[in-house]
Amino acid sequence: MARVARVDLPQRSVLKPLYAKAGFADAFAIDLPSHATGDAERLATHMLMGQARWVGWLVALRDTLVAGFGLKTSSDLRDDVATDRIDFFRVYDRRRHEIILGEDDRHLDFRLSVLVEESALCRRLVATTVVTFNHLGGRAYIAGIAPFHRLIVKSSLRRAERSGWPAEL
Image (cartoon, rainbow, N blue to C red; front, side):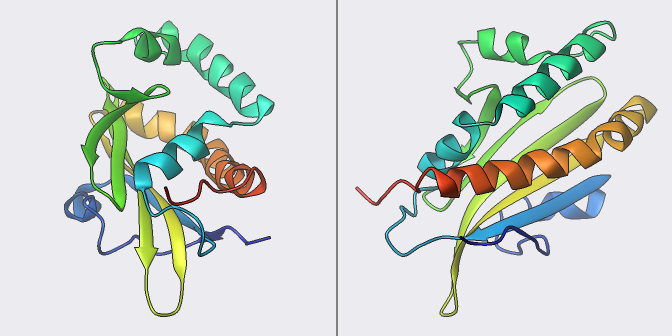
């Protein structure tokens, strides 16, 4: 089983221009086997649609807490059928080896890159999160959820591997 590791922010990501102004950013990677698809959208869908039950509970708790502040809930986002989404994540950009997901809200704007990095040494999937704050509330929000965010990203990558990476078509 491959290990999920915290890695440097990928320099080949579409998100690179956002790194300098980010209030929060992190990246985690897992090695991909040779038979796995290189299609970032298929890999992102695989990673995000098979969440652990405890992740659903955390999202429900988050939704309950933020609804009173007028922030978007996961249900609000899923109900927005006019917007291209994977689960409740809006699709901002699609490329063969990278897909950019995220959302803009009153307190912060976030982007999630799911990137397939290939080199002579390895082939890996990198999940990068970049957040810019719109006001102090965004900083407070991230301070509260950052530890859970890291657990969720690592869990999502591990679960995606355990359930079997989608193969190249």
